Length: 320
Image 1 (cartoon, rainbow, N blue to C red):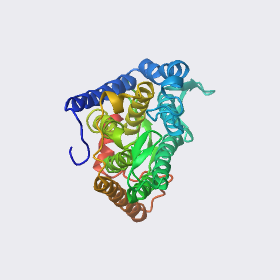
Image 2 (cartoon, helix red, strand yellow):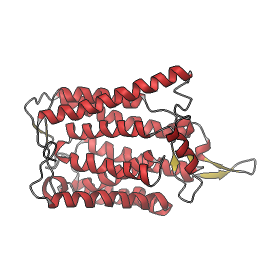
Image 3 (cartoon, rainbow, N blue to C red):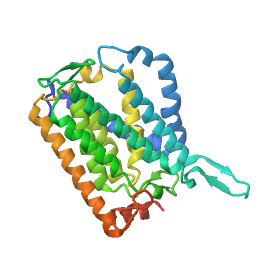
Image 4 (cartoon, one colour):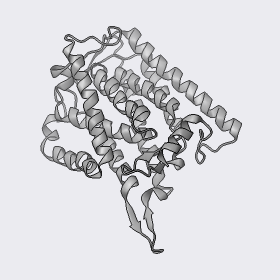
């Protein structure tokens, strides 16, 4: 990938593949076994918070993991994982003698889009912040190399459009199989791809020399399961793989810089093209979605947008 990345040793790409498959494997463990999910996303983070991260992610450390952004991103990802576990498994016996589930409450179904929008907004703010650094020739900020440019503004706009196009959350349901996955059928492939392009551009812009891992590998680790293992559970896959990666980076902060570095080419053209693709895909998604809303006279805050599409129907049929 000479246009986007340069690795001093091909073995680093082998390590990259190992990271990709490890993320997918641990995501599957946390998905199919409730006790694994609780261990990975509750017990392990508590132990790391008390005994490891105060040292490895201390403010001002040489690897840049001690910033407010890393800490906020870590706990917002974990909050998403635990919130989704609650939606999937919390139940109680009501006064009517029947068993009720948390996902039956419409207010509870507002949590997934809210936590998703917050995570996207955090990254949008960071893109605009990097532009504000005015590092037009590139430079080091918070121990990470970055370069400011129009790509930050372009991708910030793409992220805002990605938030606006989050839809159909009242159609979220829990699958009937033993894994009880959180299925969001309105989050069809078009939105997932637009998100992936935006998020990759964000990591390329703001965490450049780490983006082969926290961008490319991390996005593939949730997108592959979404298309080939458990369709419709993209947000669940995304939250769990993101939490796993951030916990690893907070624990082993030297990984992407020293142990297995895959830096970018630092080519401004690459930054521009990546963000242009992200912006174009999200503009196209927003235009198509607004067209459907207007044509079908839908309420984007209440209605599901894509119920008549093959992608939606396939997801719904596989999980009901």
